[in-house]
Length: 97
Image 1 (cartoon, rainbow, N blue to C red):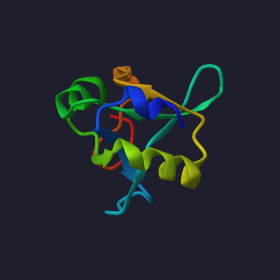
Image 2: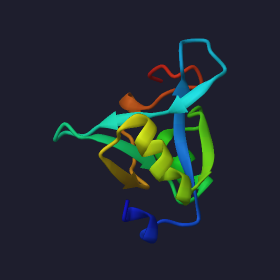
Image 3: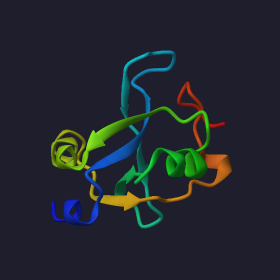
């Protein structure tokens, strides 16, 4: 994965519960308008909160772990610091806000 070179050493990754009400989290993949599966990452925690909302669960990951996440989830691209429209944001339970 070549995108790691342009990412900071650590990124903040939005997550959602594996199942509703669950405390186990999984990375929150999003589908683009073109139909690709994207992993959203944020270069700072304040950017994640600003772009995803205060209720968004998250995890911090070394950028070097993104390849492992790609192997596990099959995402097709990484989007950095993308603002999620308010009607598509998730709350702490993983549901739309």
